[in-house]
Image 1: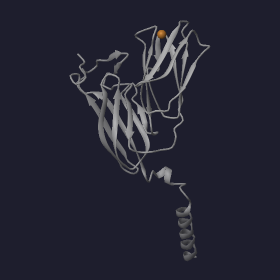
Image 2 (image 1 turned 120 degrees about the vertical axis):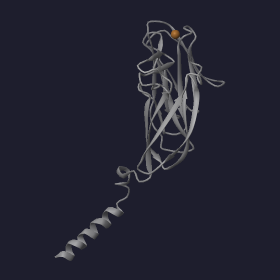
Image 3 (image 1 turned 30 degrees about the horizontal axis):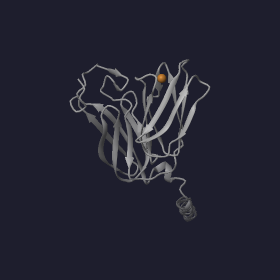
Image 4 (image 1 turned 90 degrees about the horizontal axis):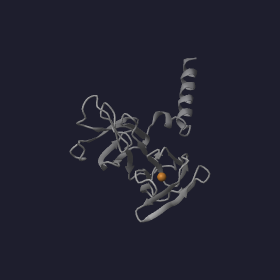
Length: 225
Ligand SMILES: [Cu+2]
């Protein structure tokens, strides 16, 4: 009897081992995660900074930084972007997606806007929008940072970061971010922010582990009073 049970156990183990990849995702055998924070290291406790281009939490977390990894490939991550023009601002102000997606601009204001989206020398969109009835869509085909302005209202500003892989994130109100299911390896990681450009770090992803990554800036380094 005992040997029959033992045999059954061996058969079961063998079956589990030969099942293709059913368990590999849940055990994260070959991927790991990044959790992290973008922070202003010399913030004053309790202070918040609420400039549209620089949002800092009471604990120094910097919102709207875009985190990317370089030198790796991954499956297409479908994440179309919609940027609305609302109360004379772009919502969201900062967006990130993988190349191959598209961006659509809408206009919720009863005001004429002219969207001009430029990436380097290339103009993606340059169009007048009177109201909500004529949204404009463009394919995002090239990795980089797209600068979005309104020709009618000089203060209106947005940025779209386009990546060449699916491993990216945007820091939240607390400056925190997560990137999941990253293949094991060592990569260059960037934190891009409109206020201070790109910060870089080398990060190593270990199977099944969370790697903590903190990007810090000081007021002096970003010329902020
Ligand atoms: Cu406008």
